[in-house]
Length: 534
Ligand code: GLN
Image (tube, helix red, strand yellow):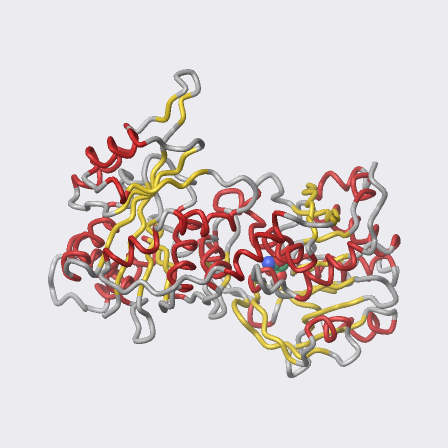
């Protein structure tokens, strides 16, 4: 029988529920259990695909083409298990399903209500993660206990636990112990109140995980246990980590969170082997060299907007035992001066939407091309490589993407045929994993050491084949295409350290112990291109 762990959050948002859930999943996996993870998000958007990165951070894309919450990126990176459409449900997705069923007459004349119809649909969503090859499902409930929006989800969890029976489903509540500097004290009251909110709706946390800046004392543990109705040994401390989120799993293992969970779920405790994770951590904490990568983007003020890109750069650092220092630069700043690029050993232009900052990205790419600085362009970044090349090598000054100019005579990047006339925005891009055939002479073929690869996509526009022959003749090398050769997936410039653009998003497939070949390629080239420090 599949067991369930529900992870709720209290007091404030941004406590790192996703990282805590992913860390626990890693520990359980390393103890031999087959894990599935999912996130239930209480907002009304059907998925985060239509939300601004300023609002929501990165949209993480799964192999099967779901546009999902960035916490799924943590799940995949920590557990190395691929997520799917069944891994992320929102209020919008739940209501859409219920309303569609109502319109189809599926409720046979009944009044459709939050309880039981919405909660039943939520329970179906939870159940969808329960397959024959899964022992434990971890379900993270987005939002904070007490939010109006999350009530139906918490009610569904209450029902689920009741139906599953004792020992088959538990709740872990992640909460904050604020440190009041003036009093020099950690406070437990907000946590007591957030557990009281849960108890009001019939949910009793089995374990409390307490985020804290400074170590808890025995007295805090006793107080929390008494007021929150958990035994003191089930009050777990999760201190702020010093250097890297990869420190969280060993810290939680030290406090035996995983074995306590297994005891509550009445599952045998097998041996834990964290040796390969310890090696990752050792490499993160003790690099023996460094390089600087300039990340030229449009949402650089929000670190979460490029979450997987930062992580993939860190993985490349792990692989090379290097500290990869990322200099986030607002692309618009480069429209005035490219001075800040002078310190960069390598440049990365990530994906994006809309015209703002594109001129700065093109300037960064020109700088990289003319100064032999290693460059990786991802999605919009690759499209900008093509535009820059057309403008400055072929001299087509008005070359542009049809996304930014409807009047250009050289739309070197254009809308895909099937996108023309589409009015619906959500879920209509080229999404998810597609195969790509690599050219024998491509730099990428040697980096991947493969002939065919599969990478995840999220875009509407493509390289325009009308200009392919002329661009190739001028020296733009097509390193990879769709198997039918129709869609350009990779462009490269040769005779230089590293100059690659890819139409897909390699960052989603990078793992701490398996750096993505393109990020590894960029960082290797950057390490060989160290600039003198200012
Ligand atoms: N805006 C571009 C497109 O839709 C690139 C998208 C991206 O970078 N993810 O094709």
